[in-house]
Amino acid sequence: MKFISPVAFKDLGKLMLEVGLMLAHHCDYYVMNQGVGPCVGESLEQTLARSRCHKGRLLYYFPQKFSKQKDGQSISSWCGWHTDYASLTGLTCGLFMRKSVEIPCPDSGAGLHIRSHDNRVVKVTFKDDELAYMTGETAEILSRGHLRATPHCVKVKSR
Image 1 (cartoon, rainbow, N blue to C red):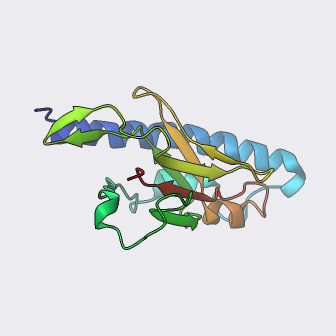
Image 2: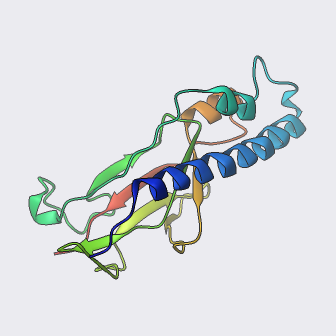
């Protein structure tokens, strides 16, 4: 059985925040270079650095047999298309378990899918030593549209 300590989760959260702050710094730089000018109020980096409201959550997707969604072939069969409200959402790779034992992903088509700026649907994949970030609606609003929220959904394993 694989056990992940609470300390490991805290360390992961701290790492995701540190990397997120570096990314926010570069987002601010990009937006300012698009002619938006200085931020009204705090920059994205300052807002995140001073916030006491960072959210962390582990998502668990139940097997499709427990879903009320009947169309298992739909790209948005588990968590429909949406954008996050947050500024930045940090992501780690998926972890798949069966009877408390880690297993490989049971369906290569399942997982996070995003809609690219040119309207293509892309399955997001990254390794267990990589982080990914999505921009949310708050970043889009504050940047006056120069950063765009990432439309995404989660596809469940096929039956």
